[in-house]
Amino acid sequence: MNTKSLRIFIEVVRTGGFSAAARNLGLTQPAVSFQIRALEKEYGNTLIDRSTGHCRLTEAGRSFLSYARSIIETEEELQRDMGERRSEVSGPLAIAASNIPGEYIMPYILARFRERYPLTDPRLTITDSGKVPESVRAGEVDLGCAGYREEDARLEYGLLCEDRLVFIAPPGHPLASRRVLDPRAMEGEPFIWREEGSGTRSHMVRILADLGLDKAVEGSMKLGSTMAVIQAVAAGAGISLISLWAAAAYIERGKIAALRFKGPALRRDFYYVLSRRRSPSPPAAALLKLVKEERPHLDEKLASL
Image 1 (tube, rainbow, N blue to C red):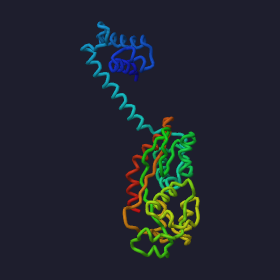
Image 2 (tube, one colour):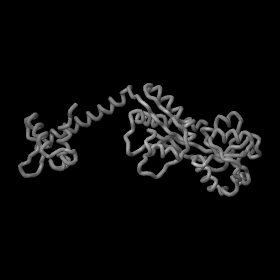
Image 3 (cartoon, rainbow, N blue to C red):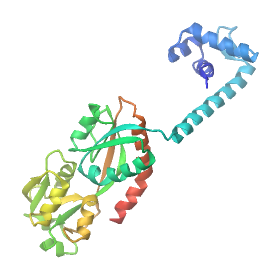
Image 4 (cartoon, rainbow, N blue to C red):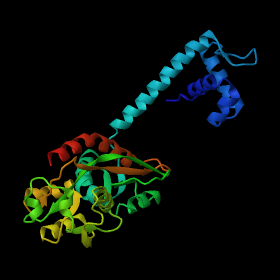
């Protein structure tokens, strides 16, 4: 559908002149004048009065402008509708995600993604939270997922879903038997930490500082994955703070115990991250659309844990 001349006419009206319209559209002024004359010849009416040295719409021009805008809007709606109905989204899709979204959230989303777009080839890499934006900036991946945002004008962030953080202890730990705890009860307890660069570690540092416990707990070990932390806590090595997405199944089976404290739940957000310098590939754009559709279901799932 060739609507180029209509778009040129609308831009001339919007800017009030042929020269300004030509600059905005990357055309020469004679090319713009030619397109307007061609429209006037085709429809047998003068659309723009140039007799005074200014561009003024004639009565026919005002009517033409209304139809032109309507045609352009209809064309854009048609393109959106046809784009959404395309089933042939295909090709590779590279994703970098930090531990929790990579292991507990993205596999759920990617399963639905492949059902809808079977010709795509998604590849998910699990890495440190700090390395996710690096991979996006470098163009190594189409999309990243992490537990915190960097202030970087080159990156665009959006909400993936919510998370809740819980303190966990071995099932037989004295703190596990208490109905409600004062945070000070954890003073002197050995803590199991995630490694440097982990989003969960960053949140743990902040939360312990907020509780006044940053200097009151003992660091017993640093581990490289959430699963390693769960196994160490289950083995009696200490207590820790982890995502409820990861902990729920082990709490339910009695492998670890969730410690209950006064006050509101400890919440954080997971984000997806894109490069502002590159347009999303068709598979990446399709995945983003699905992420937005699935967010309410993920929130419901978290609430049920």
